[in-house]
Amino acid sequence: MKIDWNSLPPAAGLRTGTVRKAVCGNLISAVFIENAGDTVFDGRLHWHENEQLMVILSGLCTIVVDGKEIEATPGDLVFVPSGARHGVVACGPEGCSYYEIFAPARPDQLPGWVGKPVMHFD
View 1 (cartoon, helix red, strand yellow):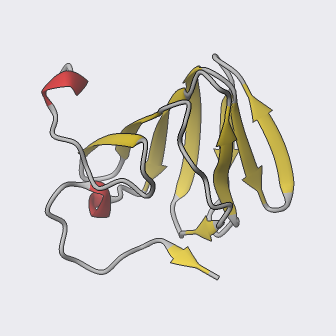
View 2 (cartoon, one colour; view 1 turned 90 degrees about the horizontal axis):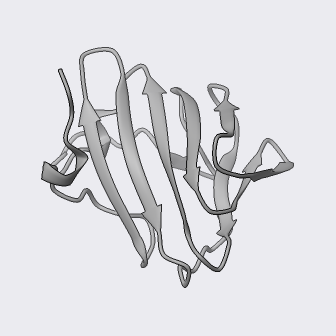
């Protein structure tokens, strides 16, 4: 099945200047994230039980994973292990976009989700 990201409604974002669109199957989910160049990042890290892959599509993306800062550029793949404290803390002046892929699936990313959150902030 082909997914048309443009046809999906935006999901709740974590910050102003970010657009998120999510799809979710039974075992895996994916989120398309686009951060504008003027997006303000608060530097807060979070964690969840899900493993996560990030595929950088455009721009420069600064990601922290368990205390290590990663400068990711288009084509880079970043792995976030289950339970790792992580977060995007900055992007370049042109903004950045990327896919996040989660296993197991994260239905909490879908619009209208009213269940228990899986993201934890220290």
